[in-house]
Length: 545
Image (cartoon, rainbow, N blue to C red; front, side):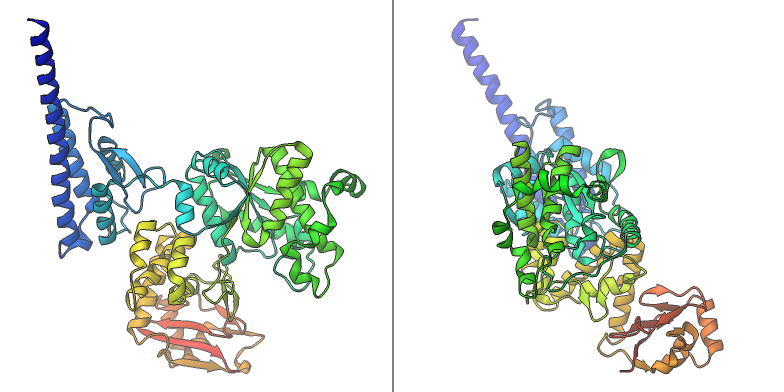
């Protein structure tokens, strides 16, 4: 064979192989398009297991590729798909992956957990769009930005690189001012969870030391002074709630108490070691002190910024913590920490503030007429927690979905187009997602079903209400039997006892299991409590003013 003939033979072989590869890729796209379009347009689309359909397509194409002996598993020789199923962890969801990898992912997660519906109509549309529009992977930092979580940063380029590549050891502080976390902590906990899911290491710093001073940020009055015993008790109560967000196993995260170093400080040594690095003139211009300047800022509170900065310094030395996160009202305190590390160690540390959770009117979310919305079910019942989010203002629901939930951002973008009654579906998604995260799936389902039954029976506004006189509260409490009788749900205490024994009574979405259960006058104040007997009989019980 001559050189020219050999060259022509090689060219011809390459063309055949190339055409074969192109044909397989086109066939893959066509088959996937037909099946996914059917999934989107089918009248029964909400019951279609799209993951199963997509797994079948992936397996079919895998067989085609193997039979044709082209491509193997190399991204350069087989189709690339954007895989965006809503309930996969960050490590698999939202990534551009090889087709054969998609097959593996689907097999791992198929079928879906029993409490979940198959992929929603929105997911189907998003998947089709991303497959055929050639969408690219959204990095962690891009997703945080898209959700509106990031307020201010010290060095965006370096922070972006560290977060996206799992190189950040970061901390967020929690002052133990109560024995439970509340909605105000929710966003920072969710933020920590997002970062940990891609390999970053969180440090939850409990302020057993700084709580003895009190953070003056956004406060107009001096905080109440707590005893050391109360502070330590509150610190112990936090870890259980944090564990629902953060994985503390195998050194994946740390929980540290700054009392370990702050309570043992020698005052004179501390002043000599740290004091020269702080300018009083500069400190007085800080945003965190402005609200306190009008009524008078005590020297005690003035030290808070220095304490917080020293925390960052200690965490940098002890654990290699290179980044601090916190609410946007903490910006001045966080900058003080990065500056202290730079001055004392000549090294860089970074700060990022998280958007504050505010209503459309500019007030902090997480308050009701009864006070704060707590994560502890003994302080705020799961039903009350669910109802709080179910009843958020129309103008706030999309923002809350972005900031607080792990609902894929693409789904939320679709929800932004919703109006009127459609927003109620978004609110239900918000309430269920957050209740499930805090209280578990079973309780979230129970709370959702109770709320639906409540609205079917006429709605909260039309629910019969009963007012109890203060005289009904013997020693400040009213027992469940008298409550059922006074509300009119039971004719006599014997009827009430029988209803409780048969498991047919709920208060705020929680089943009553004992006839000795009682409720305080504070619990029944404001909007009161919702008592349910059977499946459809509701009463709102409150205290007569």
